[in-house]
Amino acid sequence: MAGVYEAHADALYRFLLRLTLGQAELAEDHLQETLLRAWRHRDALSTDIAEVRPWLFTVARRIATDAARARVTRPAEITGVDLAAHLADDDPIERAIARCDIRAALTELSPDHRQILVELYLRGSSTTEAAATLGLHEGTVKSRTYYARRALRAVLERKRRSPSNPRNAQYIDRATAEARTCTPA
Image (cartoon, rainbow, N blue to C red; front, top):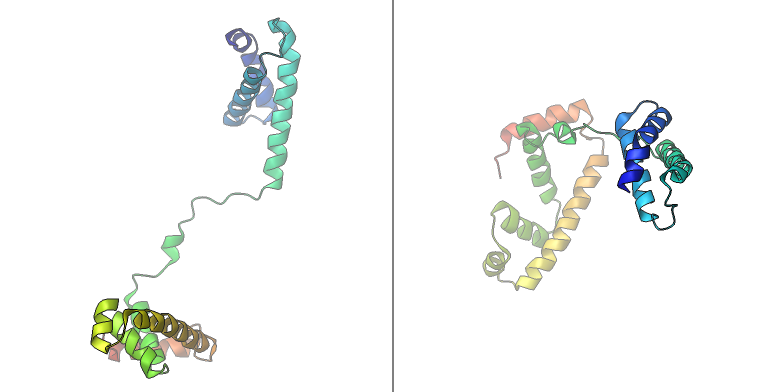
């Protein structure tokens, strides 16, 4: 294989460089793949190094063609986009608005659901502590928490579809005024 490399690598690289329109890294990758295939089939190749050359060029051309076809059929990759920069998690106004929305939605829940969510999330109790405080079994607390969160999510989604949608400028003004009056959780 060392003899095959020494005899044909430069010519194959130049050939692949033309096929890849001057993309050196791509030509090097194709050269590596061509020589890897030659190594895998070394038992079937001729022992005469000169007779291997046409086979190597055919394999190299097929590899370059297949790679070009694959690039055309695959969608272009998007890189360098930092999606975290578009999120406003650290915005105190957004947190205050969300806090007020959740407090308003809690008033629409059943007393059992509201009681569980207040105990666990606003007071920060564990499941065991909430069970002891409310006089319930831990399994009941877990079950009510699951259904309470689903009910809260449904209320919040219904409010988002209502005329007071956050995209509405009046909603933003009203929510900002509410944020001043709400106390943090």
